[in-house]
Image 1 (cartoon, rainbow, N blue to C red):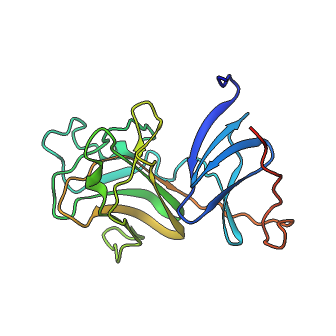
Image 2 (image 1 turned 45 degrees about the vertical axis):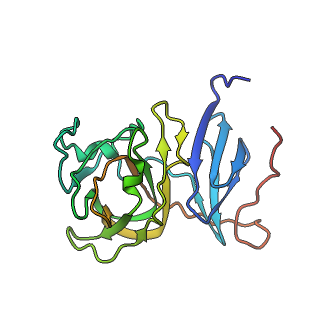
Length: 227
C-alpha cells in the first residue's frame, strides 16, 4: 500500500553496537542497525547502549560549516568545494574529490568546540566506493592538533545512498564518538588514494535519562506493533 501524506518514510542508522527501540507514536521495522519508520511527524526513536540512550538528532552540527580538503582533483566538476560534503544534499555521487595524495584528507570546522555523538559518512556510490575503505577519523580542539585517530575503518568498503536517495551498499558508515569534544573533525585515508565522499554528517549526542525502564534507567517502551 502506498504511503500517503502526512505520513513519511524515514530511514535512520544506529551506530555499530547499539540497538533500536521506538516510542509511542512511531512505527518501526527493525533490520540489524537499520530502522525504517512510518510516522505522522519526525520519528521519536532511541538508540540504546547499556544504560544510555540517544534520541534521533536534529540537524547535523556540520551542516553548512566551513570544510577543507588536501587537494583538488584536476577533473573535479565541483572545483574544490569541500563544503559541498556538508550541505545536506545526498546524491550518491562525490561532493568533493582529492588527488591521490599520500594521506588524502577532508575536514570540517564546527565553529566552536562541540560534544560529538556520532558521525555518518555517506560514500560515493556511482564509482570507486572501495577507495574509502582505509579512512580514519581524527578530532582536534585547535586547528592542526589532530593527535591519534579516534576511529579506523576495518578495510571493508561501506555504502551510502543511490541517486534516488535509497540505501545502497549497506548504507552509510555510522561511528559513535561517545560525546568526544572537538571543533575540527577530519577524515583521512591511511593509504595513498583519492578521497571522494557524498556527505559527512556530524551530530551532537542527545543523552536521555528516565525512570520505568525495568531498573535500567531507560524510559518504558510499548510493545512492538504489528505491520
